[in-house]
Image 1 (spheres, helix red, strand yellow):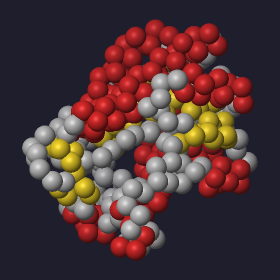
Image 2: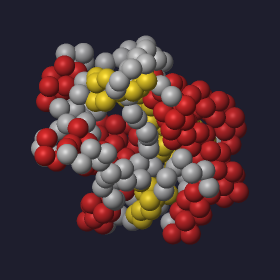
Image 3: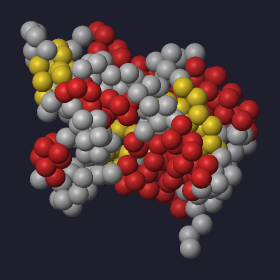
Length: 288
């Protein structure tokens, strides 16, 4: 049995009320990690979704229902396996909450040695259209604006950069041994037509991460990025799943567990000499 040497370490996992974040929090907890969960509930914008679509079937209604959850289910699951976790709701577009988040984590669990930046904002937009709202794969899409640009970058890149900065500042003071930062991107981060602001903000995340890997390396902190293919977190309808499946060599739609396992590995002692890497996790959907 390989010992990942994670027991009693403290991790912050953002966006952990559902999907990849929730599964990662549970997977880390199973290894003895004390987990500080953050989330931000986003209520469905379209109140008629419940009538139009069954929220028990993957698709727009299910995904929006997932976004509106708190972290109760995740905390209960961690408690059942004897783990230790706390959860707080934060809007990461508000830069003032970042210091408060780390203060709370240290007060309740101890010094943070693992940071998983999973929280993301995504609303499809395009550079092309200048008329009415369009639709792509069943999702509404708008022309890029200052607002759509800023919302994406506030969460997907600015918050990540500031979280890494705060993590490292405190890590130095605590004399930590083997810090880990794992940032979550998309395998469309270099080019994402129809989701241009999301893709560009994730490309900025990758650049920040690589710079951080160089700057934080002498401190013993590794920084890596997971660039994800299609992962079913409730957003893919059966029709979209079928379309995506044809683009994946392994012929398997990703599940949150497929990502969480890689995150646990990158947090482990076994990944101590891996840093500055963009790792594609998508069944071969994207290859270097």
